[in-house]
Image (cartoon, rainbow, N blue to C red; front, side):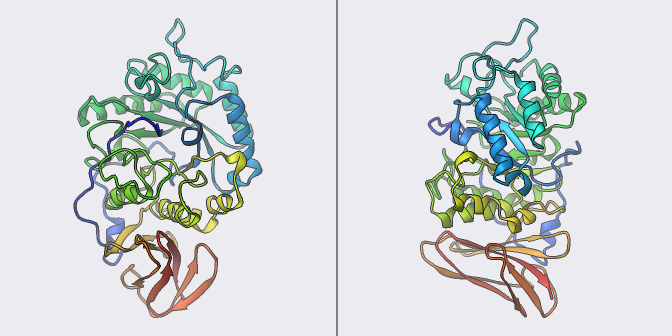
Length: 416
């Protein structure tokens, strides 16, 4: 979750050196941690989360309206499935048996009824909890009580399964705890979910207002997705390299070196998207979405789906980019080159194509270029399909485009 007025999380340490793509072999390099094999998140999860737009101001009416909007806007059919209810959904007190309860004024029908409604729309139900004694809102005194899962992991996992939960967002949100303590604590909920009898995507944030743990460890043995950076904000660049909050460019800088961690069932999470929330130009929002897509980040929208403008709808429903993100190999794009202004990322796809992002990090329009050989393709004739326009062209080797400031051109490159 993103607490926009609260300095919650510390940016994950930038791993020194950037992976270079040589014949695309680096893209398929072995992952150092065993992936969590729980049968879900074989591609990056797609959906929507309440926090970026609504914070604690949530209710069952809002969630039901958003589920309706996901269907009516075509977002569900485009691949967005998870409706995630973030912090502040719960009664500040557990019941006499220690069970979690929905906030009775905000969710008078109860959480199972809400999950049933979401499922009736062909969607999946996500919920938020924290592994210590307090959730993030409670930690910062923005919401009463202390209803975290510490000591209740098995009980809470069973409760979530009974409610029909399909996705758990589990947020550390504490300056205490070593990495080893976090691993043990997150693993308790991982194991409780496995024993609950229901397949549930496990999404963790091990970096909440904490020592920069993200890139220090591949969390693939613990969770299906894990936050790699400080909280996102709807700005292109905050100038923060180790602080709160993070802009799009800052998050990309941290996550690019972590490409080898991504695989089916295990993905680097660059945080919930800011597309459609203002604060950036359309070019920057298009770049934001394109980079999340090619970097195999979960695509979790954070805008108000009930009032999207046409530009936002077009970005979020771009089927060419969604197909690249959802490719069955589950690979994250690896860096081919970066001169500080012109950055090239490439992602091998299951059918043998390669997706390539030509990213302009500079302040003016420039030409960004690479070659078929550099992205791991052999041959002398290639077809380029522009992910934004759908137009195709051919080349014998060069892959190039004039890219506006903060823009990203994405081609799907195939041998002709």
